[in-house]
Image 1: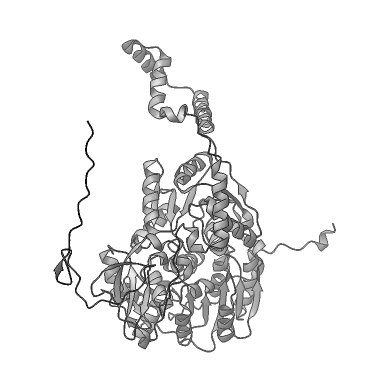
Image 2 (image 1 turned 90 degrees about the horizontal axis):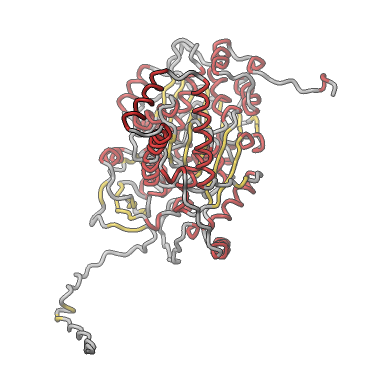
Length: 617
């Protein structure tokens, strides 16, 4: 091919970035920009509005952070750029990225603002000044109401993960925040998907935008080796430990659906000798940051997380993602596996699929346009053979180097004192290192033939049923009346979760909707949405189902969290009775309960005792 016709590979040096930023990128090892970066950086640097659509893991943060830093005025201490992020994890991640890219920019300050953190510290930081503010909508609104955050000199606004903000119910808050920004601002909107509501928001707030769309095929999905395993729920842990033992891994993120599952699975992995920790909405923010720092520093190998808690985590050493519980849509799947295969590195992802969840596997393959490979779980005997081979390799490497004479003498002394040959002593040492079942496992029983028929039945049920039946429970059709619910996708596990009813001092009169309450609980308090129960809106208050045994710090935090500008002032509802999300709502009865010994004031007649049959001799 004629070389003159070959397209030139764009580098960061070709994008007119200032020298301090190029130094930072060189230190990070970045040479060539991703497609979204190559197109977005020059556009944002020119001051144009932009709408960027690209999947997770394509480098969107650098696509807006680098041009903002290139145009920043370090002499002006008031905020010049505002980045809105849907979760605190993502806000922290974006703020860290700004700090890393600006390491050679003297006196640059970026401030992350999010719920769950000390308000006094944020107030002090704002009073000292910051060039860039990165925050979640709820906490940003709090500061705007306090007038502690001034946006009158703002130059650029970035809406990061706009589709996620829509899904979490923050779009109305975004409208309120943007109304406080100058009309002359530059606006950049980034989203993995572009539903109609996001298009409406873009039309309203982003004038004359430059549209940049990166097709999904260029996302990091192509750099990830994806596989799946059909496995029953009770066999997942064994399958995962076999996978970990046969793979060369670094950092690993394991995704589960519930907070309880993060703790339980992390404990089981630690019991099996792995270094694992849980991250979920119950864990305090300082502990979350410390856990992620341990993963980055290699003092922790496995992070067990829910979707919301893991949002925004970007750790380069994450080599594998394991979907212990299958996500309910392909977008969540792409977000999950996007935690690996970053910056062009190869990554691996394993998806566990229960027999009745085959339909969800088909949806993921169809939407991602990628066929997943079936992973062959090694048998116990194959693992035993592999352990022996690895031991032989390790010993061979040690024998290549001369073993100190003191060890030879020690073996000879042991043989003499114990009156045993060297082979017997070596066998005793190996038995302590490897349990018998690891070296000589019993033969594995074959699965019964009827399993295939049960899978077929499950598949038929899935085709005819709803996503709730994917979890093995059926909900009876009930008239919901005017009942408000949290998003349907997050209700799938609630059938088995008991909820206690709490009162929130925000209702219809304050403009509150169910999505506002869900968003505040999920983002500001870090509660997973599958653990937010039935929501009942009233005029001046609302009722919501929350899991029992709420930690004290979360309870105190929810006193101050605001919904539509109204403090929640969370309290136990009158009666405080437990309920289930799928239970019908009953009006409180004014009748006194009947006692066990009376009916309408009269004693109930005892049932005649059963007559015993005579004992035959």
